[in-house]
Image (cartoon, rainbow over the protein chains, first blue to last red):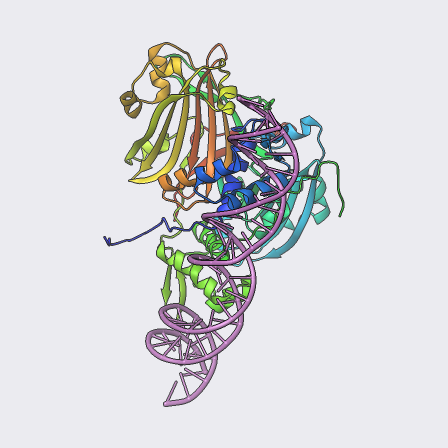
Length: 271
Length: 271
DNA sequence: AATATCTGTATGGTTTGACAGACAGATTTC
DNA sequence: GAAATCTGTCTGTCAAACCATACAGATATT
């Protein structure tokens, strides 16, 4: 075995739960539209051979899909992708988050899971550029549309700002509006990062997913005019219900071609 | 049991592999910076009690972390987060993808995994607005930086466009440049969607991850002046090595406040 | 030096997941 | 109607994961 100075062996071979893996794979294919609605899946023995597992395992995966209503099984005939199984997620643009939702006239509700003051973990403290021992207000919320949860939000706000509004205010008024209205800080700059993470127990519970599901994450830090942190937001989205979309236009002539974001985001009409 | 018309029971209780779950949880905490480098983790018995598992299970999780070099175990003393364990990912802005990388002067290589012509899956055909039975060129590539893979790219291009360049061209010249140079199509509009997905077997292998890891996904469809599809790209990124970042500025006066994207994205200096 | 705490290691028993194989019933095809 | 194919259901076997428990060696604290 070759042993290097820094032997970072990353690819640890763990392959648990073949049935679950197959389930997740098929589910992604269905909800992403690779398998069109109405189409018949390969037969159980065929899937078993294709993925190198037993038929029992294939059945377990299909059981899960059927339990979710993504798939319809007809004895003697086959397993079919249900119509309406590949629902495209709601789409949002970056600057005006959630504006599309409101325009659609859909019911968007918020549930507050926790609300307290504490000393922040090191990464939050660093991002907000807090003084040592400065406390923060931490709130955890779940956002729903049509009674279906789609985002899990963790917000950290410096105590001096958090105390200028109440818990009830937060439920009715957007955070930035509260801050600007209070006059204690003037949000000027924000940094947003989009990435991905796995669902932990709490998020899985709150979002109606299984543990280990893939989530889209967005981290936003809002800064003051003086460069002080105003808000740190960690958002976790169900990818099947929410996605970020950007329209780009090719502008400039040859030699100086460039992609520039279009102002008006289009909602995906979907199939 | 309440039974509604559409009984979509999503939350299927599956909780396999507790050791792996704990491993993923701790790994996220470490690489995201919640657990700062040098800090001691809770002891094995403490972790076991906290997460409701046996100490053996905790050890398995820590073994995986130690094997990756994220953590350092000292008998009799404790388990410590290694310095340099929380590496922030390379960052990219939307319009000028990868420009930050090039500016950094880092070595970016591409490996071609497959290249062939076939009939597209329904979702690709729909996205590109292809005629029935029109074939596409499909290529799968892996992009590396400093010999570390960070993105897995699946590209679908209509056959009529794909045949205007060779496999070798693709390795040296950006795709859009090839198309514009050939004059067969004039890319004008593009739609990008960012979401998340789980790593399947091939991606896990190519990106050096375990199956079921979280990936950031980006789907881009480029359109012609006539609204015909030119390119369909599915990109899968390792979240610990690559992330999307946007800088926003608060513009406009009171009454018409708005967030607008800043032109120059800043690279995260990191620790 | 004594004590408490922590990692390292080993044992045995229980539970769960995956497997091959077989058969019944439904459906489609010939 | 016969044959082939598919889902539904049931065995018994085997390996892996998880658990409780115990003890040795290293380290830090008192």
